Amino acid sequence: MDTNGMPSEGFAFTELPLGFGLALSMNDAAMTSYAGMTEAEKERIIMRCRDARSKDEMQEIVESLVPDGNVNSLFEGPGAK
Image (cartoon, rainbow, N blue to C red; front, top):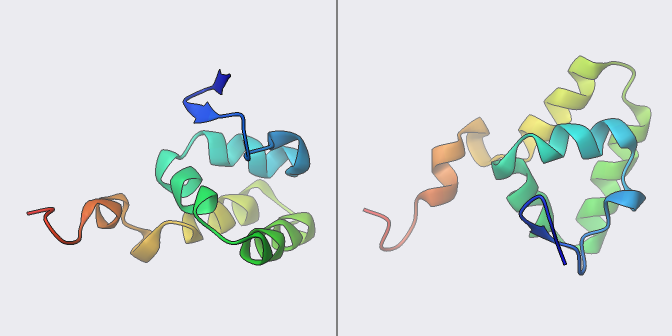
C-alpha cells in the first residue's frame, strides 16, 4: 500500500516522533534523504528529534537532512545536466 507517495513497506511512520513525522512528510527532499539512510543513521536522527524542545529545532533537524540545505542538490550528479 502507498501512503502519501511513500511505500508503506520498510517506512514506518509509527516509529517516528510525531513532530518529526509531520515535518518530514511536508519535505519530500528530506523524506527521500531519510529513507536512504542506514538504520544507525536513522536512530541518531530520531534521538536528536526526541531531544528537540521546539518546532524550530525540529524543523532544523528536518532541513539538515537535505544535502547542503538545497533541494536541487538531490537532483545533481552524473547525467543530471
